[in-house]
Length: 183
Image (cartoon, rainbow, N blue to C red; front, side, top):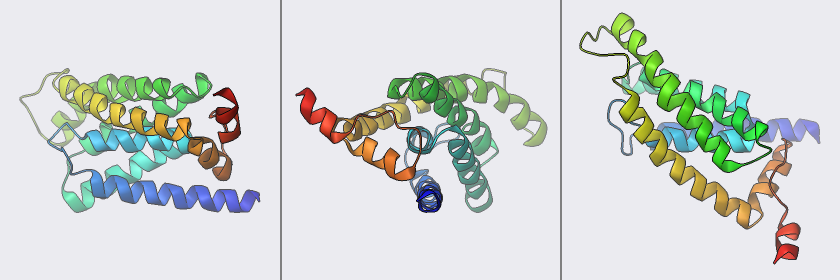
């Protein structure tokens, strides 16, 4: 059973990476990629912080190589992805905590880290330390809202519990049976 869960986690990771690459151009402008945050938060809730970090890194690298996206594809994703998973676990499964982790990690930490990366590596000279903060925060709010609504719907009908139990990860969501008995 454990081997099947590991395989299912890897397949789920691969699917989230593929979806992240495919939907990333939606609403995308430099420094604003809300669909990436939807994937980060969903991966954090489904698989945890380490998988989410790996997912964001793989999506960023693929986008940089094949789509010509600047290093913002990494700096604007990895910190939020990891913190989203950490906050979700520390809160014992509160979806809003995963969203807040993404906002703090990407909207503030990732945006500030983007300044030296973009000036020293990418050669942009007209930036300030907080140049990317507004667009990164806006992107996380948009993607975070979509992720929150999506994951809450999955939680409400018991599917989040089913997904987490099949993946063999920490389960915080309620089972469908518990939801029915609460009504």
